[in-house]
Image (cartoon, rainbow, N blue to C red; front, top):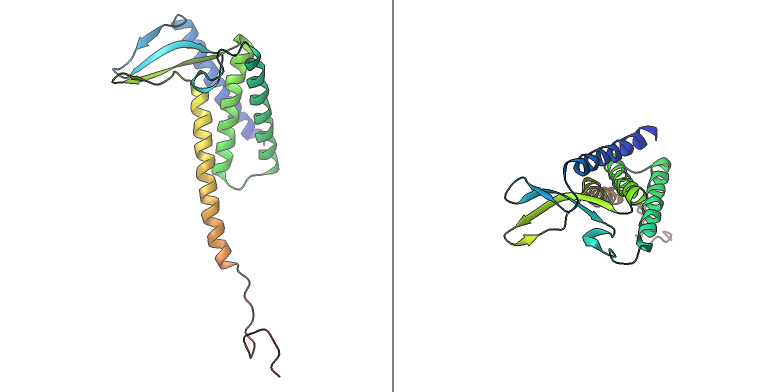
Length: 176
């Protein structure tokens, strides 16, 4: 359990270190062009994904802090109890790391620092951060783990079907 939490905290540390560098190097609401489709930016998002609830008046900060902490505790407890495979373990570690990375921002400055800014031919994806990548990646790994688990259980289910011994009349009755 300790190694899993250490890995999750390593992801949090990486996320926070990059956010610190972005805050030092780039002015708020500014960006640096890296390629024709990618900028490093520094924006604050007080809401959730795609700025959902960003203009909700401030209560959302505490809601998302509580939600992030509750999910992280639930996932850590699930890890402690044991999961089915390494893919599920990696998913939970990634989800915990991402959730806590954004919780720290909300606690520290009241909003999440976003800096990855992708765009193409007039389309602009909302900026996001490494913690968001961890959350989406963890959700994807959890989905793959559930598919692998379903495939494995359906194979085992066929192999472990109880077999009824054959009797003389094949109806389960007596041979009289």
